[in-house]
Length: 156
Image (cartoon, rainbow, N blue to C red; front, top):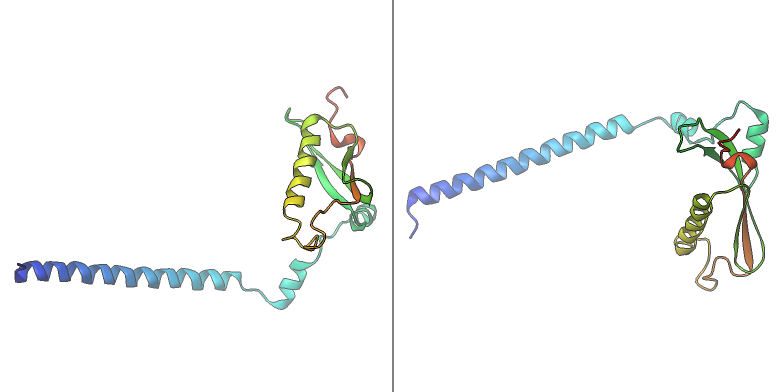
């Protein structure tokens, strides 16, 4: 049987627990409000930040604006400084193959294959195909062209 001291102790513990929970919720709400206030920006600021990046070099801007062209950073495991290269991708009629051309090592070829596998596995959720055409590459090949400098030549 519970005595009044035991009941008071349990009631006190329960009250402390409720107080801690309420305090925790207040702190959480204060943190959320502070984070929201720091994240808010004007419409003008948003539009400036949402614009595509600007390139001071007109040739670079034109190249990047071309569909299928992406910018890649070439680096080396040997500590050699990297450089920016343009990677081109083209889809064409074919048998569903991936072609990666350029002076590529096995790791780079494997990375291209892994990237294609990832895209194919998520083609429906990325809205690249419909349920009727569930095979992304059916009837087409993908060609990825890496420029000559995409793999650094350690002998130069």
